[in-house]
Image (spheres, rainbow, N blue to C red):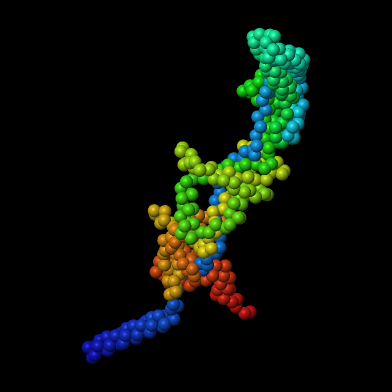
Length: 403
């Protein structure tokens, strides 16, 4: 009897354990059937579309006056008057300085008097030479007398020409005592005052006149850039935009954009050996005298037009340890693919991509940190992820229990 009870208890506990294990297995299967599917991360993408882009480059440069006239005296003398206001605008031909004209007036009068004396002697000497020529035919005078009269006549004629030249020279020097502006423009400060002694063609200028409208802007451009630009034009990646190609913008030192466009006048043909650059000269109108000589500016020079430019947001580009640019692309199977790309330059807040991407590629711009190459993702157009997430949050919020 005791044995039968023991066997009965053992069988009873075995049945209980089997029942418990069966319940656990059923619960586990139930949980597996009710578990949600694996989460697919959502990323924001933009679709690559070619655009027509005008390519430009900014080059630093400095302004210089369109014309510069350095005022120096052409005769020596004493400055009697300064006839302009420093820093004012002057016109071509306007009087600037007056040198004491008295010595030059005296030289002119002296030359005129000598000329008159030579002209007065000419008539008598000419008549004498004519009479001696007639007497020589009759052998009434010697040949020597006639030759002396002829020589005197020629000397008097030469004296007349000499004094005519002296009168002209004295008149020119007298005119140089009144120093005038050779060009129109703005004159700077005067280096001399009334009472100063100046010498002809002295190294120190009296003043400087600069024409400020229009103005030159001289910028250096590297030969490497020029060669790259020629290769792009030759390969057809960019086209030059006809007459508008020579139009140049200008950014002032404070970052503001200059109101008027300039015109590219020429590229120098000589390379500066120390810098490896060539000079570009651009002409800008300056009606309000905003530009002054020596100002630092940046010229926006047009390279050409890229009719099939690929631009992607800058946040869509990452870098590998070597610094090479990378982009994540969602393919047709909704899988992430990593692409190595080449970047030309930044245009605004976007990169200009030259290779590695094709039209209609979907580039990940948001959510790139949540995915890896090869992962399956849900691609949503940029700008719609926030609304989608907000809608999901509203749907998943628990409802408050009814009272």
